[in-house]
Figure 1 (spheres, rainbow, N blue to C red):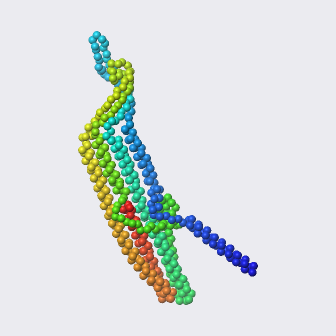
Figure 2: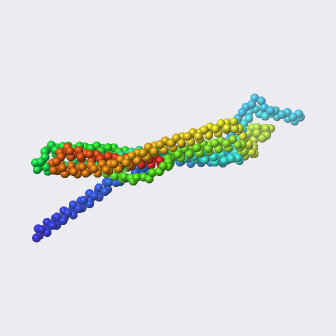
Figure 3: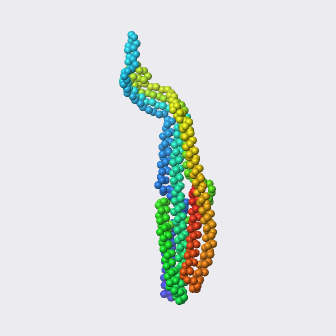
Length: 430
């Protein structure tokens, strides 16, 4: 009785130990395995791509430029000095009093503070143009980062396709193994030959080699994807197959906003050219020392002085070229609009081609389902016939390979359909 009780305790202990080991193994597997989505890959690729670091630099440069331009409306200080020697000077002779001559060597050192009174929005316009130029740089950067989606699509769906092929190849190996078991049983019963068994074993090894090739290809894809997203992507990483996206005909690409910003920049530049031709009025205060004094040339020696008042200036040179500059600016805008329309045309054309691919793959998948159903029925029959010795191992392998090829075709078409849908979504920018 005691021996039986001890045996039961030992058996229970072994069961608990095995159970604990299974839990530990499952936990370790869960820790090693992680999942990732297509949207996460998009986001991580943008964040880790070296070009992304330019975004902060562009924004800082924008702030510096606008701040510098804004200082143009505050009073401006300048310091000037001259020292000259003249070959002749004005002399004054008053009969009965004295004779005075301005010295031939003259010196002057003065500072001047000026404040514009008629800005006409020039400073504001320059800040506006500087901001638009920075936004255009940001949008050009966004366009380059957006192109990462195409590369991520290629790698992400390439891995999903390989995973599907590996799964189907594993099913084929199971079918071949089933045939091996049945042929082995037939050999044991003396109703089949070792040659049939060897054919099936060779086919199983071939399927295993195919799995090795697929896993090597998957590793190459995961290594590249991992480099783009700066994350570990290996055989334990599960790429979640995304749902079919909602597709629209509208185009919302970042390039369109860049074209619009270019047109806006030309428009604001033309306005700046126009208001820059207006007369400019400013107030000024000038103070310094001179010999002779600029305000009293009869004074001898260095003397202090100051001058204050208003200054009107009008450079009419810009009026000569204003009309042509306006035409050049208009031509530049029309060039950008032509480029924008060309981009829209090519994008729409690409979307139509991709939509045709979507329809084609949808029809192919429907046909694949029918083919698989028929091939599976034939395979089931062949399995029974092989067991009963009605067909040879070669015939069995032909039916297995035909069904396996049909499943591989469906996996391929399903991934191609999904990839075409996301390529369409990427092309449209939605």
